[in-house]
Image (cartoon, rainbow, N blue to C red; front, side, top):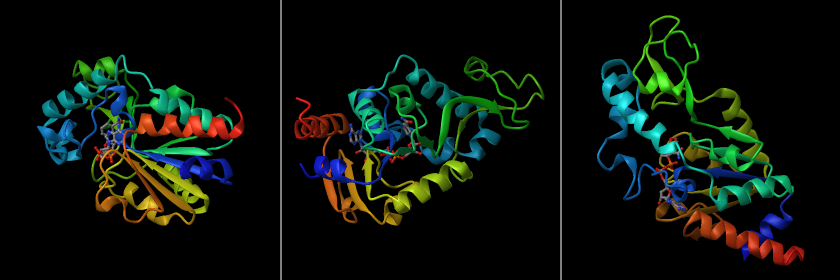
Length: 239
Ligand code: NAD
């Protein structure tokens, strides 16, 4: 398989993931048939306006997402990507996911472009708080402000350090593997277009979103990643 060969010979490889990377860990994505947004419009809730004007809906939505995270674990695909980093086949993971599953699987260089769900803080003074305080709709213990998860809401600035590092590494990498993203959310969807190396798109549904890539693999992340790992092991004489 082409991707296995490319990984084995690439000088530097960056993996870019989206919510489809985590659906096989039972975390719904946003835009496929079973996604979160089937019944709720993302713009109405994952936005500063909801935090300001509809805090009840905002907390209910993110409480549901925090609860969905409880008891989840990285799947084999996350583990293979961590293994690739450990063995020098992958340099870093840039992710739109806010679930922490790459780090939980053992990936070390992870750029969380959209922040982290479990990192609760006060929207007013920045003081940290526990997820349980947020779920109980408590006010900030320091200033009485509204608590929120450390995710980037639509219209908010991305974490500059994570973004800039991911961007420069993607620009100079010889291989970019994009996994499980609809490529609809700006500016993360621009990253593959800025790559100078080979680009691969692995997604369950591929439409016009795949046209700019050197290689398109349509299917489930876990299935394809573990198959690539098997072929690499064969090629390395590890089986
Ligand atoms: P998205 O929902 O827009 O797209 C997910 C894509 O993954 C879809 O095209 C879908 O066909 C594909 N997919 C679903 N299951 C797959 C699988 N098993 N294997 C391969 N592909 C699969 O998500 P996005 O592009 O990441 O962007 C939207 C926003 O979603 C981001 O801002 C992100 O923060 C947020 N989000 C994150 C999580 C999470 O952290 N797990 C969950 C939901 C949404």
